[in-house]
Image (cartoon, rainbow, N blue to C red; front, side, top):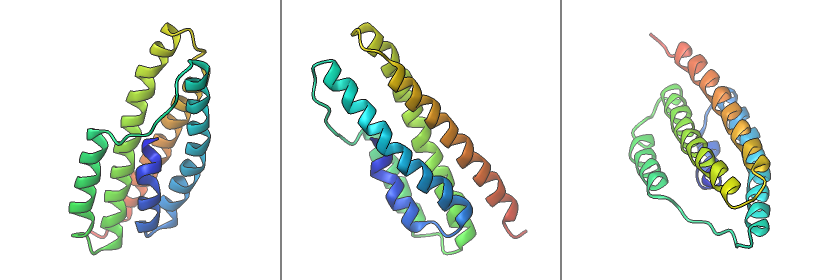
Length: 139
């Protein structure tokens, strides 16, 4: 799961509870997402494996290059909220592609649909936090 790759790092770097709470909650959700995906692979007669995508590698590189330049905690958290949102967008796109594939393979897509719905909810929470963080920035 993509979130397993980046959420713990973001959670460690975040300065405000406003962002830490939705990140921590989504990390817990992600554990359930991983179990659902593994169960689907098993139902399809395949073994799930983990690989970091090029897109995620790019997001991680962007993160690493930028976060060390941000000394002000408020700016850092605004950036981290955007980084988390980018990861959520990537996961939403992947689940959206996997759902019709699961149907095509004769596998019940409901677990993927649940994951997709939860990813969308997590994205909304991150976007709310990002708006509030931006509003808190000193003028």
